Image (cartoon, rainbow, N blue to C red; front, side, top):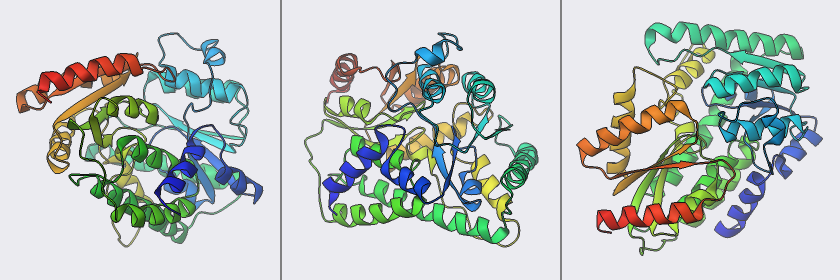
Length: 377
């Protein structure tokens, strides 16, 4: 399969709640575990024989069902995902594991528990500072989650099962890292819109089948070069981002996205889980807890700044575009602070506010054009 055929296949995976790979998994007797956030260890689900499925609002036409239970000041990403669940469009889930990502998703957890008929429902309490003093709390929560899954579904997750899951998920991380390496070229062979579609699909289909597709994609891309007519290379960061069309609206103005450091983008993968002896579950938990931090975490803002600076340097980017879903409080605070820190570093920084599932090509186009002109691009 070549690039275009593979990307078309992955577009079909991400355009609605169900996809052919998920349906085939279910048809073969497989179970599916839903979750919202990369701080929830999907390797545990894989080790238990589940397909990890990251919740999103693709295919939702409106948020009216979620609106009936949630404030209009809760972000539209959450309201759309809850609406899908209330309309039974996520009826393929055998369970959900949620956490207090933010107050909005904490509210969604209440609705899943009370109103959505999912057989298994669990909640993970995750500390808000990625500090060693708090790691034991998180590790105990992950151990409890594993025990709950084993008890409810009548199975045993062994250390060997966890090691196999680590190997499989590391294979995905390695492929995503190779994809991002190709984007460092002067003429990247894949656009930001296309790359985001790839990383979204990784959260919605069996990892083994995803890895096989990406092997073919990487072979095809390695022999190609992209266009060099872009006006600027940019990094897209900020809150949840699972909309390739939003990236496309940026790129149509000549701002090529060479990395998406956001949920569903590169932030959700990170480095490999290191090999080691002993407790596999602790290695998984350590990888999750000390991953690239997002705005829900505190006492780590300097690490976020340093990571963005390094990404700008490594990808030879000219600027950062920060996007935030309206009413996302954690990212509102970080966006303000990032603006001033990047100003000090001399890195151009554009902040955009958006709604989930609302086309914004006109507004984005105007803002990005003005931003590029201000940069002299």
